[in-house]
Length: 105
Image 1 (cartoon, rainbow, N blue to C red):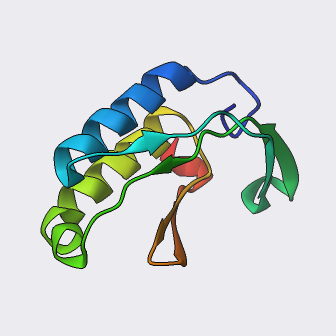
Image 2: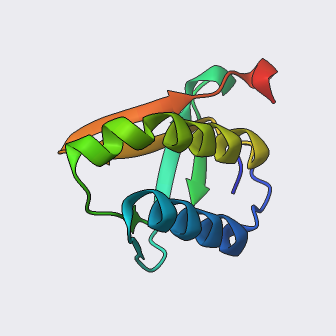
């Protein structure tokens, strides 16, 4: 779901993510859909229920450093085109996210 509760072409974004991370880092794995909820503070704390797919890629710090601009470009494109409030990712057990303001949509 996007931040407004509209369906997202999740198969497209899973494939795009696998392709991008496989290209940048040499491989990646998508895990089956789960159930989740995200609090959209820019919309008054509205809870957005979704079915996220977790995608994991093992790589080195050096590869992340080298590929950081391309990784960020992909994450921003996905977040904007899929009308997300944020795209979260974890590097070495540290949660990071790119947030998108309502006016970015």
